Length: 172
Image 1 (cartoon, rainbow, N blue to C red):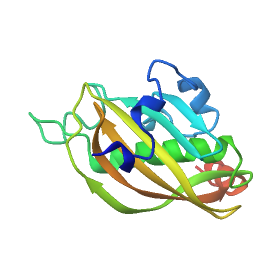
Image 2: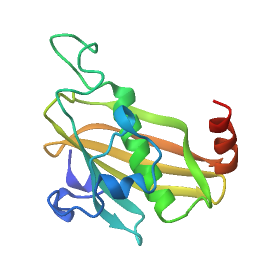
Image 3: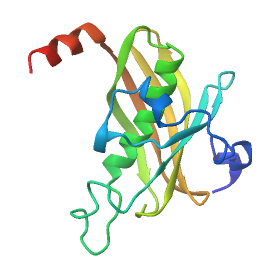
């Protein structure tokens, strides 16, 4: 893919320069254990509303044993979840939806182009394209492996009021 079509040219970020590690990501994202799909954030640009991070895809991921035994492919829904977590991190960190947890409201225009395998570093780049404060965020995302586009689409984030989530958790 031509770099002009990419949200962010790979020369603009350094995968060895971590802006937010897993502990920092956890300050903004509620996912834990096998549902944590980000390893690090490596780029944030508030002027352009662009963020980049990555997921080191391990050989012990929860899906490896059962998703295509003998040829484990990272499920597309997990790739989209990783992208959603990147978008959620950015929107929550900068309080763009207000005081709420960011939930997945939808995915649109998703295209899978190449497989993602254990041992890969999945680089995710997201750009906030629309925002209705307190209601909705829309981010365009791209996922790359070795600078090759493997997936792209749009993520809709919705505001989930923290008080409702706390009540639901207390009832469990």
